[in-house]
Amino acid sequence: MANQDRLKIERLGGFGGFGLPGSHLKSRGEVSESELSPADLQSLDALFEEEAQHEDPMPDAFRYRITRKVGGSEKTIEVPEHQVPDALRNSVQDTLE
Image (tube, rainbow, N blue to C red; front, top):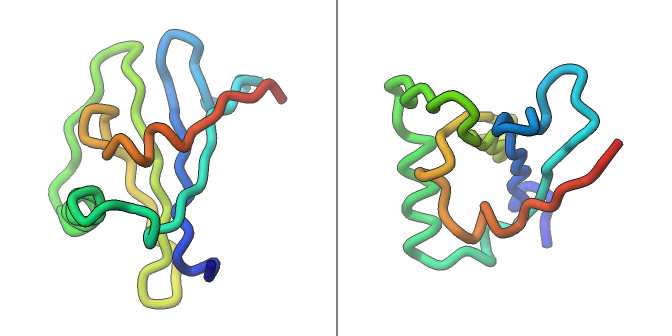
C-alpha cells in the first residue's frame, strides 16, 4: 500500500482527555483509503470538502483528527465523533505513553 493512501486518525478529548496536551493517553490508528467501502470513502470526501467550521463538540465528547495526503501535501481536519465513518473509528487503538 502506498503511504499517500494512508489516513492517520487520532481520537481526542473525552472524559480521559485523550491526546490533549499533558495527557499520557493516546488513541491513534491508520487505515488505507483503498480499504474503505464506497460509502465510507464518500463520507470521508465530504468531510474534507466542507469548508464550513465543523460543529463544536459537547463537553467531554470525543472528536477525531483525520490527516490525509491531498495533492502531495497533508491536510488535517477535526470533526465530532458522530461524523466519522465506522471504519476510521474502529482503526483507533488506545495506548499509554
